[in-house]
Image (cartoon, rainbow, N blue to C red; front, side, top):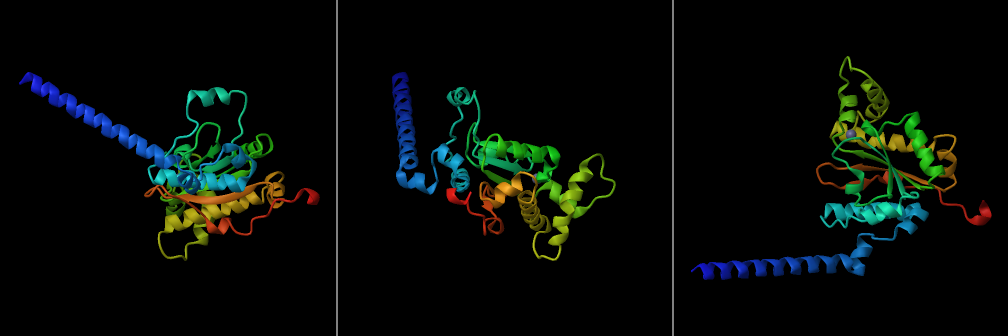
Length: 256
Ligand SMILES: [Zn+2]
């Protein structure tokens, strides 16, 4: 009897490990196929760093993988730590909210050295944030800036609710977001999420106009500045159409 139990247990674990191996192999085959890579925009980092339009697609592909539960968690091991010890070339700057539910590398399925990130509540920017963006643009030659808001943002909700006697410096955040709230107060639907979108659009326009560095680089087509909203219910990032149209094209060499 003892032997029989032992035999059945061995058989069970052998079958289990076989089915796990098979599952692993199937997943690998899918994510290795050319069609899957194209659809999920798994491209080499260098082209994304050189061309912000490719960088944008790389972020979109990474978020698609995240939403579908097919993350590849690229460049997240000690080999990459060693590789990056002499410097970084992040292919995108993300100006996002501090909210703990929006970890940028996770939602875009990127790794070490990929994203230069500035996070404040409501992604409200002031001098130090602007300086960080300019540093990434000038020194690190990062050509893509994404302003990333998110649904149900607490900072935006506070600007909608306008509580009295706000303590400390929190009032600064609220005051910066108030104009976006006012602009969309007439719109139907969710007041906070409408304001989240408007806040991102306003922040994108603000960065496009920011002197003395970002404005010139943007109008010359050397960098892209776009906006997006992360949905905390679905994990999906929506790149806002309003910020993707009429983008300045990079100048050709003979136009420079
Ligand atoms: Zn937030």
